[in-house]
Image 1 (cartoon, one colour):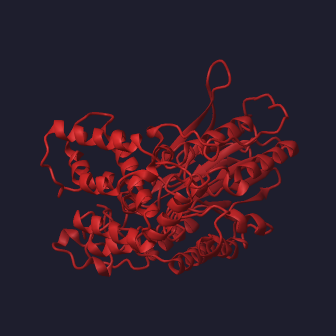
Image 2 (cartoon, helix red, strand yellow):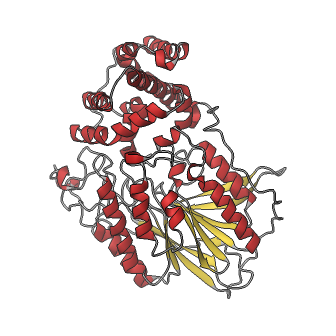
Image 3 (cartoon, rainbow, N blue to C red):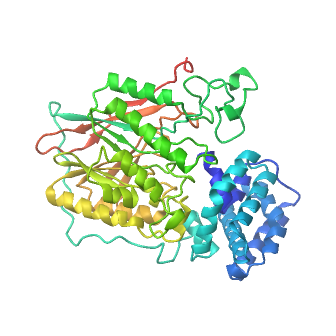
Length: 525
C-alpha cells in the first residue's frame, strides 16, 4: 500500500498501524507488560457493549497500546494482522464512545490532529489537512453505521474475521439459464486481423510539480514549491519527474502520449483511472474536477482519432476514497463528481447518461461483436468508509453487470471489462470480490479480457473455477503499470494485441512484447 494512504487510515480506524512506522514512541514497558496491556484492552472491548465503554479507560491506556509496537513487530508472521485488528477495534470503540458521549465533528478533528501532531505521524501541515478533509466523513459514517467494532474491523481487514451481517454478507443472483459448455478459444492465424489496444493507468499528474525542489521533503508528496529547496544536489527533482515521493508534471504525460501516437498504430484506448496527485491532505472537489477535465482534454488531444474508454479511480474524489452510497443525500452526496464525469466522458460513450450519473459505470460497443463494460470499483474499495453503512451492491452495479453479460451471451458478443482496483486485491472488499468471481466464472465464455490498474505494478491475476472436480484457470486480469513515477517506477503503458474484426473472432487478448516502461529522460543512464 502506498504510504500516502496512511494519512487516511490513521484518521479513521487504524492510526496505531501508522504509528508503527514512526520512531518517536514510548517503549517504557517490558514484553510481559505489553502483552498484558493488549489483553486488558481486548477483554474490556469484548466484555462491554461498545456504547458503554469508558472513554477514559482508552485514553489512559493509549500509551500502553502504542508501546506494544516494538513487541508486536517481533512476534512473527501474524504480528501485522494482530496489530491491525487490535488497533482497529480499539480506535473504533473509542471514537464510537466519544461520539455517543456528545462529541462533535470538530471534537473528532481536534483529537485526531493532536494525536497526529504529538506523535509526529506527519508534518503539522499534513495533519491539519487530513483532519480537515476527513473528519466529516468519519463522523457521519460512525453515526450511521449499525455495526460494533469487531464487525467494522472484520470488513476493513479480511484477516480480522468474517462479518456476519446481512448488509455485508450478500449475494448477487444469477439468471436461471445454464452456463454454456466451455470450449477452448480458436487460436487466430497469423494472417487474421488484429486490434492494438493502448492501456493507460494511474497518471497522477501534479500541476504543482516543480523542477529543482526537494524530492525528499518528509511529506507524502514532494517535488513541489512547498517542498522547499533540496538540502543537497542529489535531492533535487528532475525536469520530467523523480523516482521518490513525487508524481509527474503534465509535460511528462503529454510527452508519453505524443510518443505513443507517433510510434504505434492504436485502434482504441482503455484508461483505468487515478488522475489526481498523491497530496490527499490538500486537494479539494474543485481540484478533482479541474484535473478530470484537464486530463480528458489531453487524452482527446492525442487520440481524437480513436475511441477512448475511461474508468474511475479511487483518487477521483475529495476526500480520496470517498464515494458515498446512493442512500447518502445532500451535501455528502457524490453527485458533484458523477455529474462532471458525465460531462467529461459522454463524448466517448454516448447514451450512458443514466448509469454515469448513478454510479460512473457504463457499457459501449467497440465494434460489432465486441463490447466494453467499465465498472466503478470504488464500491468494492475497503478504504471507502461509506460502505460500512451498507456494502450490498451499491447502485446495483453488479446486478447490472450480470444483466449486461447475459444480453451479450444471448447475442453472441464478447466483452472486455475495465476498472481501477483489481478484484481479489486486499483493497477490494472480500464479499464484492467473491460475487464478482462468481459472475466471471459463469460468463467466462463471454468475458475475454479484464483490465485494471491501481497497484502501479506490471501484473496479472488468474481466476479459477472451483466448481469443477479439479480447479482450473478460467480467466485472466491484466493489471497495467502506472504512468506516475511515485514509489520508484518508470512511466509505463501497455499495448495489447486483440483478436480482430472477422467472423468467429475469439476477441482474446495477448501481450506478447508490447509492454513498455519508459525511462525518464535526464534520469536514466
